[in-house]
Length: 306
Image (cartoon, rainbow, N blue to C red; front, side):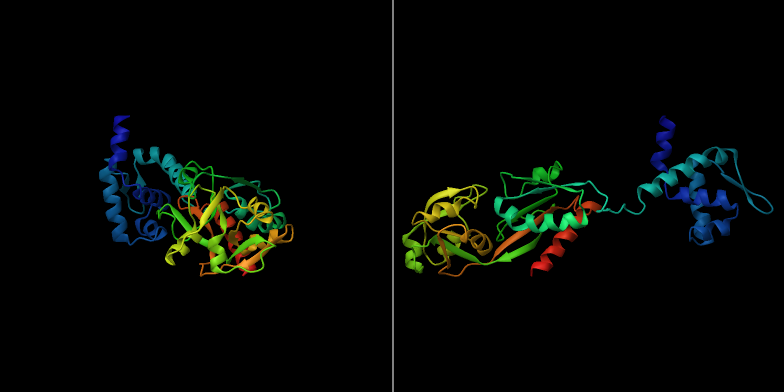
């Protein structure tokens, strides 16, 4: 065992291709041509292999190179090793969506579920009817530990540049939307003074005590009063309908809820950045055939909604 270990420590595995080519062709120039080496480079590689294996390996005769007894004894195992390596590092398997029962795992909020999943599931029903989508909530905006443990493949979340950068996580914007403010339909007009006089609902899926609205107000030297902090957006409009509370949220969600409740939709009375829904992926697994395919579907849906 120690002898085998010692040989492996000094053996250049690339030289096994040289050995196999010469064993098959029994002629240096033909063997060199078969693996795209010059005759000189091939001869130097053979010399190195002879030193590393401590055997002549091939003896020149009048018309061909004759393998030694040791060369004959190792040829079959070497062939099997090369075949295994070729399979291991060969062309990556393709993902076949129409046949696959693969499970894709997403970390989501209630809003990202509302925004993305109806579109995605309708699309998947047509192109990959047997795949399964699993949605989970996590305590952090960027659940790196869940990526590392393979509990999730993708995370869907909003961000305005405050997510800590990491080389393990890649991100791209899937959806952009403007913000608006919801109030009871008893309110006729919303200016900055009214906005600051009224109390607000803060939606904070990950427990932050302030949000993008507060950041923008601070740039104006202003602040708002938070009356209640919620972990999800879907319950918030019900609180707005029968109170003087305000909530500022992406326009898509407001329009989806406006027809179901006695609420009014207003433009935010100061400058706001656009809402950005981002797809976060884990660098070590994002290039797997299945995840690469899913990312392509998400991009296709994004282009369709623009």
